[in-house]
Amino acid sequence: MLVRTISLSFMTCLAIVALSVSTALSQKLSREKQLDELADAERAFAAFTVKEGFRDGFIKFFADDGIGFGPHPERTREKLMKSPPAAGPRKVIFNWAPMFGDISAAGDLGYTTGPVLFTDMTENPRPHWHGMYFSVWQKQADGGWKVVVDMGVDTPQAVAPINTQFRSATVIKRHPSKHNVPNIGASDLSQLDVQFSDKITEKGMAIAYANTLDRTEFRLHRKGHMPVIDENDLVRFLMSGDKFEYIGGKISSSNDLAFTYGKYARANQANEIESGYYVHVWRRDSEDKWRLVVDVQNPLPKSQK
Image 1 (spheres, rainbow, N blue to C red):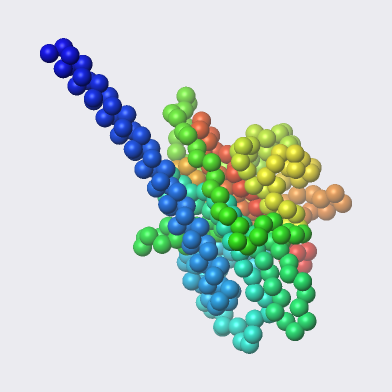
Image 2: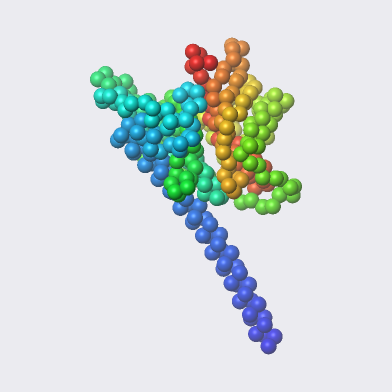
């Protein structure tokens, strides 16, 4: 009887271990599948836009409340639907592809970023020029993905080929925090940017970014520069203090991924005030702290400030 009891206990333990492994594998495959679906949605967005043009492509793939910058924040789909289709041949065709992205644990919010190729289609075309797009997507009630915020920057050269391979962000292995960290809701998102801005004022750019960034995996996009994904390259962008004025954002239902956007201002080297708009993506780390994983900024033209 004792042998049988031990055997049954052993078999029960094996079953629990097998179930745990199976569940973990299922979750991993589910995340990979969801990320693949998100990357496919981005590819479909690009392909449709190449074929049909900017207006129709952005109307089709933006959410009703999706925000673009032209150069000020605006509901892209609403604005484009009020404008007539372009007449005559297109002057510029731009194509892009996802090369990096992440998704919330709930699978309802995610982002992708990658290279953009601009092709001049006029009679006297100038050479191709390049950029990096950045889009946050939200899953809709019908299960499809739509863009909820989008901000791109131009780059001095190609970051990667348009047929580049997609890579996902590192999976965060979370464990219960030693502290009771409450979840935040959409109404509290502004505090992420407010606290970040306060840190910059109090401690300076370098310390504030060091204390806020996910230092193992972050992206910083600035107009006219290649993407910054290394701390050594980050230093040259931390010479002045940024002030962030939060406008809006969204958070995943799993409370682990969020984006915020708003207006920034800083003094440049000539002591002139540079202003523009930013998009931040925040992700909870393994200790349940919010970390900045994506930081995109685009300055306003001087005539638009």
